[in-house]
Length: 557
Ligand SMILES: C[S@@+](CC[C@H](N)C(=O)[O-])C[C@H]1O[C@@H](n2cnc3c(N)ncnc32)[C@H](O)[C@@H]1O
Image 1 (cartoon, rainbow, N blue to C red):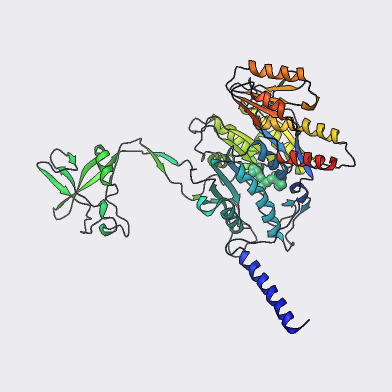
Image 2 (cartoon, rainbow, N blue to C red):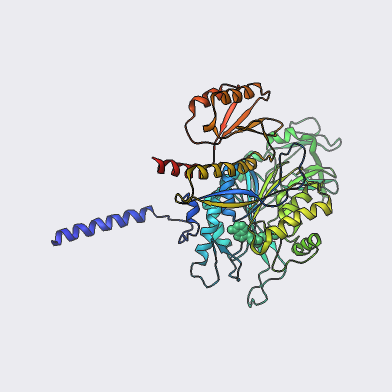
């Protein structure tokens, strides 16, 4: 190769490197992606749900049940992506803090220990994938709260800024925790954090409600540093008052004095209210006076708040209540201490869930552990001082050391009996189907998947009762709409179709949703079905299901 050619090649290489550098992220968090769940993402596996334990507390119409899912939360979240897209109002999670302690954080099938050089990358890859799905589950006014300590706070904050955007960051609470590391020589850490983000600009949190304990009159003048007239000229205007009758007006009347927002030392300030607000809320304004030692009298305008007035205040970022007690509360229900378990305090989780402005929120905790979130929501339902009336929850936890089976499920069940929560729970478990074209026949696998899909649709419909109308048509026991599942469509004959069409025609509900458990082309019949009722929607099937069906179709071609 000539020198010129070598140089040309070198220039090309540099150009490419330059281009790659330009594409690289320039600000924020970067880490080495560590992959341990690739098979799920590649559609090699189909996650599905099976019944695990006895459900309890069925209500009459069988809808709106609380759900406990045992399994890896990544598998469960993949299912919720189909069943609960944009339906969750609040997510609370308490993930492993990545403290480096033995058997604290498991990713895929391996425990990540403190000596791993990629300890933070593993944790970030793990949490990133879960939060990406979590974001899609949140409704437009949804909120997410994440407990974390110093080990990963800084990285989690940057990650969440990327996922939820920094403009949706509501704030971080600093929560006092008991103890602190005894081996700390310099700073004994006795706090952790609660990170809060909203899904969109539209979302908001429930503010701190307080009621005034006595009648109060607070000056209408601003008096902070830099709150001087020249900063807000529009808030500098006279208010008129009659000293004898105490009447206040924004227009001058006979015998009235003129009052401007001027401090006792003569500094010109401005009012807290705009002129139009002062007109609207004139009844709340009062004339106040200060008498100085030399006999001089100075008049001011105050805002009157009677005793018992409801005030919405911002929260303090430092939380010093609920510092311990989670373990004892769990023991109170189960009758025994669970070693190695550090459940959160019930009142703390109640307080977090109460930050939702919704009356009947759907709340998800996908690191549920001992199920504190479930019990806290049951408590909240009973709490008449809370604005939350009828929350529903979805808890997901793995079964490490039988935590789901023996702690979480038992806790909700026993607490329900002990404290008369009048609750309900459906206990499910995730399974993975590995598509193996050598092992399974196409028909077997299709039938198997369709069968499993029904359990997933039950979760999507928040309804666990299905009535068989005929061998092709199933119907959910909804009260406000009709939801049908049409199966084995390829086996249907013309008269079967006619029967389905006539059932739909006779349906008196305003809205009909239909799931057709097939991928083949049945356009002709679907057209026919869609004309059977004025408002029919065909519901989509989960992407993971379709991916495997496509694989089967491809193989057959
Ligand atoms: C810090 S604890 C949560 C404790 C919980 N807030 C309470 O009050 O009981 C985290 C829990 O998440 C579970 N967990 C960890 N990784 C998980 C995963 N990938 N999928 C499901 N659960 C997981 C652990 O078994 C553990 O019980």
